[in-house]
Length: 171
Image (cartoon, rainbow, N blue to C red):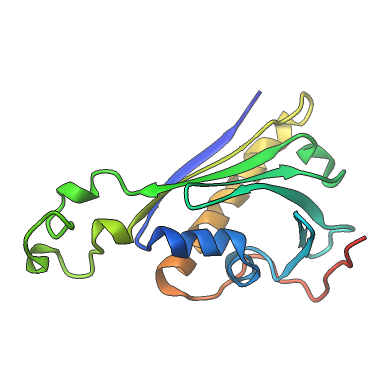
């Protein structure tokens, strides 16, 4: 069974990355402007899509965010799950200017201290037999989305990948 896995280092504290994954303002800043919530289910609306993607929040803490597909749309996402693992960027302590170093003056211009950097491991798995052919296209979209997530977490610049004029009402 295929699994999409992407890893990136973000020059932002874990709390900022977590907020980008768990709050309405965070999700609409980099993913889609059509985000609603129905209890523990997030509803993601996209242009020209007949109904929202429904993702149940299974876990959301400083180390990990996990969503499971909770709807019948899109059909190729049936049974899939998405996880976001957050950690302090490994090896950051060995760089000049890390917290265990005596002087911030040793840090290269613009480099964040270790506590201000997050390693994000994104995974989307659970693809059912027969849905594998769509995985490469989904992986490409996730790669573009993660670049926007990183840019938003680092700069605060809002640039959602999908812009929709309407939101679906929760059932």
